[in-house]
Amino acid sequence: MYPGIAEDKPIDFNKLIELPKLSPQAFQHPWDMQAIEALAKIPMFPNIVQKISSIFSEKIVRLAFTANAVRLGPNQGRSLYKKFEKAAAILDIPKMPEIYLSSELAFNAIGVGINQYYLVLFAPLVDALNEEELLAVIGHELGHLKCNHEQYMTIAYMIKTFGDVIFSFLPFGVGAAASLGLQLGVLHWYRMAALSCDRAALLVVQNPKVVASTLSKLAGGSRKILPEINLEGILEQAKDYSDVYDSKIERFFKATTMRMETHPFPIIRVKEIMAWANSGAYQKILEGDYPKLMPAAPQPLLQPMLPQSPTAVCPHCQNVIFLMGAFCPNCGGNLNPAPVVCAKCNEPTPPGAKFCFKCGSPVGAPAQN
Image (spheres, rainbow, N blue to C red):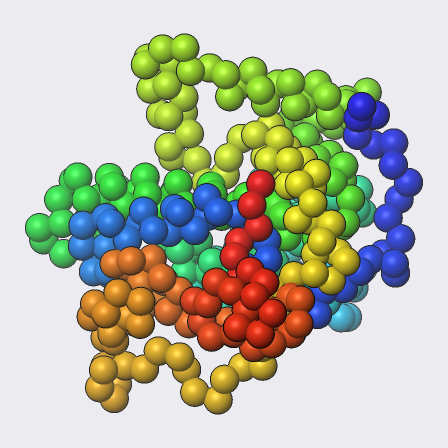
């Protein structure tokens, strides 16, 4: 039985467990990785991504944030910035992004940037959440950084914001079908990536009901009625939505409703995060049983074919690719996988290894539902 969402005692921030050397492979949702693989099958995907990346101007975005928002730091918005520091320590993120607080009337938080990640919280969201829920949102946004989502997030943001205007800049011959395929593919990935980052939020606040209450507010809850909302009702609502598959026309309308969204519906996210919280995988991570990052290698794992060349050979599928993202556009393989050590015996394992050579335990596999 699930009591009212807001009935738990406040979180003691000083007692939250930190997760040193946490690998993103410990919590990435399998649908996230599957969506990346699907992107690789879109025609001319490398060319399209490279062109959109060239259109995006980090300098202009930073200038806009600097002019229209407050940049947070140890001496600016200190109470809010300390939550970022705490979340970064839990997820083992050594370098903080630039963080801004905007007064724009949006119930949202966004992160953009290809070479430099900028994170923006909007005042209406900050005002609506309690301290624990705000930490959950921060954990979600830093989860994108932990999972190296920055480039595709930025592409999704540009597609969502500018739509067909973006594709007027693409090379002649891309075609409407490829443009539509890219839009739908990137936005589908963004929705699946949000599920990974909801897990990051849970690892930060270490209380499933806090994540659920945060997502419930995104779905229309409020502080006044939240104590009267129970998870049983939310999960039943999610089941009602999932069960709407009685006819092809209903599946069509369900798909068209979601296809241009950047996040799954909050009700579905509540169902997913509660399932993961109860799966055992989440608890194992808190107990220290998770894939761990090795120290950074002195040389990159993927070398360009020639000095200053934008191309390289994928170590997974051996195809020549453009060096423009974290994953191979042909096979979806991680181009610079973080070295991982076995969660059982701490033995280093080479990239792509499925089992530890020393003790035989599974290593590096995404947690399953």
